[in-house]
Length: 175
Length: 231
Image (cartoon, rainbow over all chains, first blue to last red; front, side, top):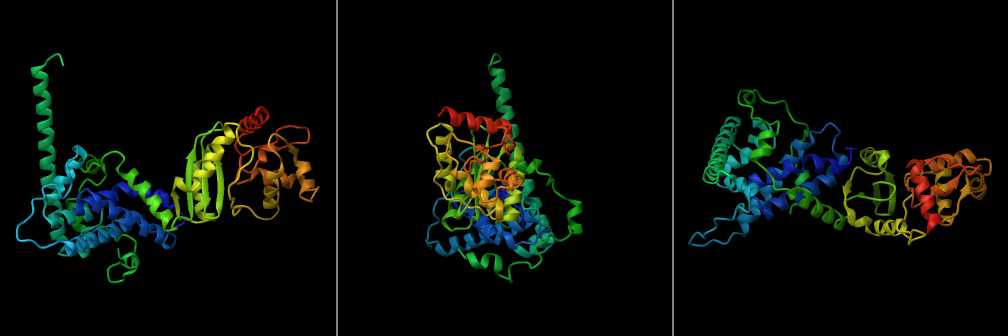
Protein backbone atom coordinates (compact mmCIF):
# COMPACT_ATOMS: atom_id res chain seq x y z
CA UNK A 1 0.00 0.00 0.00
CA UNK A 2 1.23 3.45 -0.89
CA UNK A 3 -1.71 5.31 0.61
CA UNK A 4 -1.60 6.91 4.08
CA UNK A 5 -2.26 4.30 6.77
CA UNK A 6 -4.24 6.87 8.71
CA UNK A 7 -6.98 6.71 6.05
CA UNK A 8 -7.49 3.02 6.79
CA UNK A 9 -7.99 3.84 10.47
CA UNK A 10 -10.53 6.52 9.60
CA UNK A 11 -12.38 4.32 7.15
CA UNK A 12 -12.36 0.99 8.97
CA UNK A 13 -11.83 1.86 12.66
CA UNK A 14 -15.55 1.51 13.39
CA UNK A 15 -15.98 -1.81 11.59
CA UNK A 16 -12.98 -3.31 13.35
CA UNK A 17 -14.25 -2.14 16.73
CA UNK A 18 -17.66 -3.74 16.05
CA UNK A 19 -15.97 -7.03 15.12
CA UNK A 20 -13.82 -6.98 18.27
CA UNK A 21 -16.81 -6.16 20.46
CA UNK A 22 -18.96 -8.88 18.92
CA UNK A 23 -16.29 -11.45 19.78
CA UNK A 24 -15.12 -10.09 23.13
CA UNK A 25 -17.85 -7.79 24.44
CA UNK A 26 -17.44 -4.04 24.87
CA UNK A 27 -14.55 -3.32 27.20
CA UNK A 28 -10.77 -3.45 27.64
CA UNK A 29 -10.37 -6.80 25.80
CA UNK A 30 -12.08 -5.47 22.67
CA UNK A 31 -10.06 -2.25 22.92
CA UNK A 32 -6.84 -4.29 23.15
CA UNK A 33 -7.82 -6.40 20.14
CA UNK A 34 -8.55 -3.20 18.18
CA UNK A 35 -5.17 -1.71 19.10
CA UNK A 36 -3.24 -4.89 18.32
CA UNK A 37 -5.02 -5.14 14.98
CA UNK A 38 -4.05 -1.66 13.86
CA UNK A 39 -0.52 -1.91 15.23
CA UNK A 40 0.04 -5.12 13.26
CA UNK A 41 -1.59 -3.50 10.22
CA UNK A 42 0.63 -0.41 10.53
CA UNK A 43 3.70 -2.65 10.51
CA UNK A 44 2.54 -4.67 7.51
CA UNK A 45 1.05 -1.74 5.59
CA UNK A 46 3.85 -0.91 3.10
CA UNK A 47 4.14 -4.59 2.06
CA UNK A 48 0.43 -5.08 1.50
CA UNK A 49 -0.46 -5.47 -2.23
CA UNK A 50 -2.24 -2.42 -3.59
CA UNK A 51 -5.32 -4.41 -4.67
CA UNK A 52 -5.94 -5.78 -1.15
CA UNK A 53 -9.48 -5.50 0.18
CA UNK A 54 -8.34 -3.59 3.26
CA UNK A 55 -11.53 -4.04 5.25
CA UNK A 56 -11.60 -7.81 4.78
CA UNK A 57 -7.91 -8.02 5.59
CA UNK A 58 -8.35 -6.00 8.80
CA UNK A 59 -11.35 -8.10 9.80
CA UNK A 60 -9.26 -11.28 9.45
CA UNK A 61 -6.48 -9.81 11.58
CA UNK A 62 -9.00 -8.55 14.15
CA UNK A 63 -10.67 -11.98 14.26
CA UNK A 64 -7.31 -13.63 15.01
CA UNK A 65 -6.35 -11.02 17.61
CA UNK A 66 -9.72 -11.45 19.32
CA UNK A 67 -9.34 -15.22 19.36
CA UNK A 68 -5.82 -14.85 20.82
CA UNK A 69 -7.29 -12.76 23.61
CA UNK A 70 -10.13 -15.24 24.18
CA UNK A 71 -7.56 -18.04 24.52
CA UNK A 72 -5.34 -16.00 26.83
CA UNK A 73 -8.39 -15.23 28.94
CA UNK A 74 -9.24 -18.96 29.13
CA UNK A 75 -5.64 -19.81 30.09
CA UNK A 76 -5.58 -17.25 32.87
CA UNK A 77 -8.98 -18.12 34.22
CA UNK A 78 -8.84 -19.56 37.73
CA UNK A 79 -10.97 -22.69 38.09
CA UNK A 80 -13.43 -22.50 40.98
CA UNK A 81 -16.25 -24.73 42.19
CA UNK A 82 -18.86 -22.05 42.32
CA UNK A 83 -19.58 -19.98 39.24
CA UNK A 84 -18.87 -16.38 40.12
CA UNK A 85 -21.64 -13.91 39.52
CA UNK A 86 -20.52 -11.83 36.58
CA UNK A 87 -23.53 -10.19 35.02
CA UNK A 88 -21.42 -7.31 33.71
CA UNK A 89 -18.36 -9.22 32.53
CA UNK A 90 -19.18 -8.66 28.87
CA UNK A 91 -20.35 -5.23 27.99
CA UNK A 92 -21.33 -3.02 30.84
CA UNK A 93 -24.59 -1.29 30.01
CA UNK A 94 -23.28 2.21 30.64
CA UNK A 95 -25.75 3.75 28.21
CA UNK A 96 -27.84 2.96 25.15
CA UNK A 97 -24.87 2.58 22.82
CA UNK A 98 -23.26 -0.01 25.01
CA UNK A 99 -26.58 -1.72 25.65
CA UNK A 100 -26.55 -3.49 22.28
CA UNK A 101 -23.13 -4.98 23.07
CA UNK A 102 -24.50 -6.46 26.29
CA UNK A 103 -27.23 -8.06 24.14
CA UNK A 104 -24.64 -9.39 21.71
CA UNK A 105 -22.60 -10.78 24.60
CA UNK A 106 -25.59 -12.86 25.69
CA UNK A 107 -25.81 -14.66 22.34
CA UNK A 108 -24.22 -18.12 21.96
CA UNK A 109 -20.54 -17.90 21.03
CA UNK A 110 -21.05 -19.33 17.55
CA UNK A 111 -23.66 -16.71 16.71
CA UNK A 112 -21.37 -13.96 17.99
CA UNK A 113 -18.45 -15.21 15.89
CA UNK A 114 -20.65 -15.56 12.81
CA UNK A 115 -22.06 -12.05 13.30
CA UNK A 116 -18.55 -10.65 13.84
CA UNK A 117 -16.94 -12.17 10.77
CA UNK A 118 -19.80 -12.30 8.32
CA UNK A 119 -22.38 -9.68 9.21
CA UNK A 120 -20.22 -6.95 10.74
CA UNK A 121 -16.94 -7.85 9.06
CA UNK A 122 -18.42 -8.59 5.65
CA UNK A 123 -16.49 -11.81 5.00
CA UNK A 124 -18.27 -14.37 2.79
CA UNK A 125 -19.76 -17.42 4.58
CA UNK A 126 -17.12 -19.73 3.14
CA UNK A 127 -14.29 -17.68 4.53
CA UNK A 128 -15.99 -17.06 7.87
CA UNK A 129 -16.48 -20.83 8.13
CA UNK A 130 -12.77 -21.43 7.54
CA UNK A 131 -11.95 -19.05 10.37
CA UNK A 132 -14.52 -20.05 12.97
CA UNK A 133 -15.08 -23.68 11.91
CA UNK A 134 -18.17 -25.50 10.68
CA UNK A 135 -19.78 -25.34 7.28
CA UNK A 136 -20.63 -22.15 5.36
CA UNK A 137 -24.29 -23.08 5.75
CA UNK A 138 -23.97 -23.33 9.53
CA UNK A 139 -22.26 -19.93 9.61
CA UNK A 140 -25.10 -18.48 7.55
CA UNK A 141 -27.64 -19.91 9.97
CA UNK A 142 -25.77 -18.83 13.10
CA UNK A 143 -25.44 -15.25 11.83
CA UNK A 144 -29.09 -15.12 10.76
CA UNK A 145 -30.34 -16.53 14.08
CA UNK A 146 -28.20 -14.09 16.06
CA UNK A 147 -29.27 -11.08 14.01
CA UNK A 148 -32.92 -12.10 14.27
CA UNK A 149 -32.63 -12.29 18.07
CA UNK A 150 -30.92 -8.91 18.21
CA UNK A 151 -33.44 -7.27 15.88
CA UNK A 152 -36.22 -8.58 18.09
CA UNK A 153 -34.66 -7.12 21.20
CA UNK A 154 -33.79 -3.89 19.43
CA UNK A 155 -37.30 -3.36 18.12
CA UNK A 156 -38.86 -4.42 21.43
CA UNK A 157 -36.66 -1.82 23.12
CA UNK A 158 -37.65 0.80 20.61
CA UNK A 159 -41.33 -0.08 20.99
CA UNK A 160 -41.03 0.11 24.76
CA UNK A 161 -39.25 3.42 24.42
CA UNK A 162 -41.93 4.96 22.18
CA UNK A 163 -44.69 3.49 24.37
CA UNK A 164 -43.06 5.23 27.34
CA UNK A 165 -42.82 8.48 25.39
CA UNK A 166 -46.46 8.23 24.27
CA UNK A 167 -47.50 7.47 27.82
CA UNK A 168 -45.61 10.48 29.14
CA UNK A 169 -47.26 12.71 26.54
CA UNK A 170 -50.69 11.46 27.54
CA UNK A 171 -50.04 12.03 31.21
CA UNK A 172 -48.57 15.45 30.62
CA UNK A 173 -50.18 16.82 27.48
CA UNK A 174 -48.42 20.14 27.93
CA UNK A 175 -44.96 18.62 28.16
CA UNK B 1 0.74 -10.98 22.29
CA UNK B 2 1.98 -13.11 19.43
CA UNK B 3 3.00 -10.08 17.47
CA UNK B 4 5.25 -11.67 14.90
CA UNK B 5 3.03 -14.60 14.08
CA UNK B 6 -0.09 -12.51 13.78
CA UNK B 7 0.38 -11.69 10.13
CA UNK B 8 3.01 -14.19 9.13
CA UNK B 9 1.57 -17.50 10.26
CA UNK B 10 0.98 -19.31 7.01
CA UNK B 11 -1.25 -21.93 8.58
CA UNK B 12 -3.71 -19.28 9.63
CA UNK B 13 -3.18 -16.52 7.12
CA UNK B 14 -4.73 -16.96 3.70
CA UNK B 15 -1.96 -16.32 1.18
CA UNK B 16 -4.41 -14.59 -1.07
CA UNK B 17 -5.19 -11.32 0.65
CA UNK B 18 -7.89 -10.35 -1.82
CA UNK B 19 -11.47 -11.15 -1.00
CA UNK B 20 -12.83 -14.07 -2.95
CA UNK B 21 -16.02 -13.74 -4.95
CA UNK B 22 -19.18 -13.76 -2.90
CA UNK B 23 -20.46 -17.32 -2.60
CA UNK B 24 -23.88 -18.10 -4.07
CA UNK B 25 -25.39 -18.89 -0.64
CA UNK B 26 -25.03 -15.25 0.22
CA UNK B 27 -27.34 -13.93 -2.43
CA UNK B 28 -30.53 -15.40 -0.98
CA UNK B 29 -30.31 -13.75 2.40
CA UNK B 30 -27.72 -11.07 1.94
CA UNK B 31 -27.98 -8.87 4.98
CA UNK B 32 -28.26 -5.17 4.63
CA UNK B 33 -24.57 -4.47 4.76
CA UNK B 34 -24.96 -0.99 3.32
CA UNK B 35 -24.27 0.08 6.86
CA UNK B 36 -27.56 1.70 7.81
CA UNK B 37 -28.71 -1.14 10.03
CA UNK B 38 -25.24 -1.85 11.33
CA UNK B 39 -24.75 1.77 12.35
CA UNK B 40 -28.19 1.95 13.89
CA UNK B 41 -28.28 -1.34 15.77
CA UNK B 42 -24.57 -1.92 16.41
CA UNK B 43 -23.98 1.63 17.48
CA UNK B 44 -20.71 2.86 18.94
CA UNK B 45 -20.73 5.57 21.57
CA UNK B 46 -19.35 8.92 20.32
CA UNK B 47 -15.60 9.17 20.77
CA UNK B 48 -15.09 5.40 21.10
CA UNK B 49 -12.93 5.16 17.98
CA UNK B 50 -11.24 8.52 18.63
CA UNK B 51 -10.08 7.38 22.07
CA UNK B 52 -8.62 4.24 20.54
CA UNK B 53 -6.89 6.28 17.84
CA UNK B 54 -5.22 8.44 20.46
CA UNK B 55 -3.97 5.33 22.21
CA UNK B 56 -2.85 3.81 18.91
CA UNK B 57 -0.81 6.92 18.10
CA UNK B 58 0.91 6.81 21.49
CA UNK B 59 1.74 3.11 21.28
CA UNK B 60 2.95 3.47 17.68
CA UNK B 61 5.25 6.29 18.79
CA UNK B 62 6.57 4.25 21.70
CA UNK B 63 7.32 1.35 19.34
CA UNK B 64 8.75 3.56 16.55
CA UNK B 65 6.16 2.36 14.06
CA UNK B 66 4.97 5.65 12.57
CA UNK B 67 7.34 6.90 9.86
CA UNK B 68 5.34 10.10 9.49
CA UNK B 69 3.34 11.72 12.28
CA UNK B 70 1.03 14.60 11.54
CA UNK B 71 -1.36 17.01 13.15
CA UNK B 72 -3.22 20.16 12.16
CA UNK B 73 -3.00 23.57 13.77
CA UNK B 74 -5.14 26.70 13.45
CA UNK B 75 -3.21 29.86 12.60
CA UNK B 76 -3.72 33.42 11.31
CA UNK B 77 -2.93 32.06 7.83
CA UNK B 78 -5.56 29.35 8.11
CA UNK B 79 -5.28 25.73 9.24
CA UNK B 80 -1.79 24.28 8.84
CA UNK B 81 -0.82 20.65 8.50
CA UNK B 82 2.42 19.72 10.26
CA UNK B 83 4.18 16.44 9.51
CA UNK B 84 7.37 15.03 10.99
CA UNK B 85 9.59 12.01 10.45
CA UNK B 86 11.77 10.72 13.31
CA UNK B 87 14.47 13.06 11.90
CA UNK B 88 12.42 16.21 12.18
CA UNK B 89 9.73 18.41 10.70
CA UNK B 90 9.30 17.37 7.08
CA UNK B 91 6.26 19.29 5.85
CA UNK B 92 4.18 22.33 6.66
CA UNK B 93 1.15 22.69 4.41
CA UNK B 94 -1.56 25.28 3.88
CA UNK B 95 -5.22 24.29 3.66
CA UNK B 96 -5.35 25.41 0.01
CA UNK B 97 -2.89 22.64 -0.85
CA UNK B 98 -5.55 20.16 0.36
CA UNK B 99 -4.37 18.10 3.33
CA UNK B 100 -5.51 14.77 1.86
CA UNK B 101 -3.44 15.40 -1.24
CA UNK B 102 -0.45 16.41 0.91
CA UNK B 103 -0.72 13.19 2.94
CA UNK B 104 -1.00 11.11 -0.25
CA UNK B 105 2.20 12.71 -1.50
CA UNK B 106 3.97 12.06 1.81
CA UNK B 107 2.85 8.42 1.61
CA UNK B 108 4.40 8.07 -1.84
CA UNK B 109 7.57 10.07 -1.26
CA UNK B 110 8.42 9.14 2.33
CA UNK B 111 6.36 6.27 3.74
CA UNK B 112 2.70 5.22 3.88
CA UNK B 113 3.13 4.50 7.60
CA UNK B 114 1.41 7.78 8.38
CA UNK B 115 -0.51 8.40 11.59
CA UNK B 116 -2.17 11.38 13.18
CA UNK B 117 0.11 11.53 16.21
CA UNK B 118 0.18 15.04 17.65
CA UNK B 119 2.75 14.38 20.38
CA UNK B 120 5.72 14.34 17.98
CA UNK B 121 4.71 17.82 16.83
CA UNK B 122 4.12 19.39 20.24
CA UNK B 123 7.34 21.44 20.20
CA UNK B 124 6.94 22.87 16.72
CA UNK B 125 3.24 23.58 17.32
CA UNK B 126 4.12 25.51 20.48
CA UNK B 127 6.85 27.46 18.64
CA UNK B 128 4.47 28.29 15.80
CA UNK B 129 1.91 29.56 18.31
CA UNK B 130 4.62 31.82 19.81
CA UNK B 131 5.65 32.97 16.33
CA UNK B 132 2.09 33.93 15.42
CA UNK B 133 1.73 35.67 18.77
CA UNK B 134 4.80 37.77 17.88
CA UNK B 135 6.93 36.40 20.71
CA UNK B 136 9.24 34.15 18.67
CA UNK B 137 11.66 35.22 15.95
CA UNK B 138 13.34 31.95 15.01
CA UNK B 139 12.46 28.28 15.10
CA UNK B 140 14.51 25.80 17.01
CA UNK B 141 13.34 22.37 15.85
CA UNK B 142 15.09 19.68 13.81
CA UNK B 143 14.17 19.84 10.13
CA UNK B 144 14.06 16.96 7.66
CA UNK B 145 14.70 18.24 4.11
CA UNK B 146 13.84 14.86 2.57
CA UNK B 147 11.26 16.37 0.20
CA UNK B 148 13.73 18.56 -1.69
CA UNK B 149 17.02 17.96 -3.42
CA UNK B 150 19.91 19.74 -5.09
CA UNK B 151 19.75 23.47 -5.66
CA UNK B 152 16.27 23.77 -4.18
CA UNK B 153 17.49 22.27 -0.93
CA UNK B 154 20.53 24.57 -0.95
CA UNK B 155 18.23 27.58 -1.23
CA UNK B 156 15.90 26.26 1.47
CA UNK B 157 18.87 25.71 3.79
CA UNK B 158 19.88 29.33 3.21
CA UNK B 159 16.46 30.93 3.84
CA UNK B 160 16.53 30.79 7.68
CA UNK B 161 19.58 33.11 7.45
CA UNK B 162 17.28 35.95 6.37
CA UNK B 163 16.52 37.52 9.72
CA UNK B 164 13.04 37.95 11.14
CA UNK B 165 11.43 41.16 9.91
CA UNK B 166 13.87 41.46 6.97
CA UNK B 167 13.44 40.59 3.32
CA UNK B 168 15.70 39.79 0.40
CA UNK B 169 15.03 39.65 -3.33
CA UNK B 170 15.17 36.46 -5.38
CA UNK B 171 18.26 37.97 -7.00
CA UNK B 172 19.98 38.58 -3.66
CA UNK B 173 19.27 35.03 -2.53
CA UNK B 174 20.71 33.70 -5.82
CA UNK B 175 23.89 35.66 -5.16
CA UNK B 176 24.09 34.45 -1.54
CA UNK B 177 23.89 30.80 -2.52
CA UNK B 178 26.69 31.34 -5.04
CA UNK B 179 24.69 31.25 -8.26
CA UNK B 180 23.76 34.85 -9.18
CA UNK B 181 22.24 33.84 -12.51
CA UNK B 182 19.81 31.38 -10.95
CA UNK B 183 17.13 33.92 -10.05
CA UNK B 184 14.36 31.87 -11.61
CA UNK B 185 15.57 28.69 -9.90
CA UNK B 186 15.50 30.51 -6.55
CA UNK B 187 11.88 31.38 -7.31
CA UNK B 188 11.14 27.70 -7.93
CA UNK B 189 12.95 26.70 -4.72
CA UNK B 190 10.79 29.13 -2.75
CA UNK B 191 7.61 28.01 -4.50
CA UNK B 192 8.35 24.36 -3.68
CA UNK B 193 9.52 24.96 -0.11
CA UNK B 194 8.09 21.98 1.84
CA UNK B 195 8.46 23.85 5.14
CA UNK B 196 6.83 27.27 4.68
CA UNK B 197 6.63 29.67 7.66
CA UNK B 198 9.33 27.68 9.50
CA UNK B 199 11.73 28.02 6.55
CA UNK B 200 10.89 31.64 5.76
CA UNK B 201 10.45 31.76 1.99
CA UNK B 202 7.90 34.51 2.65
CA UNK B 203 10.89 36.83 3.27
CA UNK B 204 11.90 36.65 -0.38
CA UNK B 205 10.46 39.31 -2.70
CA UNK B 206 10.83 40.44 -6.28
CA UNK B 207 13.50 42.99 -7.15
CA UNK B 208 10.77 45.62 -7.62
CA UNK B 209 9.66 44.70 -4.06
CA UNK B 210 6.59 43.00 -5.50
CA UNK B 211 5.43 40.03 -3.48
CA UNK B 212 6.28 37.40 -6.06
CA UNK B 213 4.39 34.20 -5.37
CA UNK B 214 3.54 32.15 -2.31
CA UNK B 215 2.41 28.60 -1.80
CA UNK B 216 -0.07 29.73 0.84
CA UNK B 217 -1.42 32.55 -1.32
CA UNK B 218 -0.33 36.19 -1.44
CA UNK B 219 -2.68 37.09 1.38
CA UNK B 220 -0.83 34.67 3.68
CA UNK B 221 2.53 36.10 2.58
CA UNK B 222 1.31 39.62 3.40
CA UNK B 223 -0.02 38.46 6.77
CA UNK B 224 3.35 36.96 7.71
CA UNK B 225 5.34 40.01 6.55
CA UNK B 226 2.99 42.37 8.40
CA UNK B 227 3.23 40.24 11.54
CA UNK B 228 7.02 40.44 11.44
CA UNK B 229 7.00 44.19 10.81
CA UNK B 230 4.71 44.79 13.76
CA UNK B 231 6.52 42.66 16.31
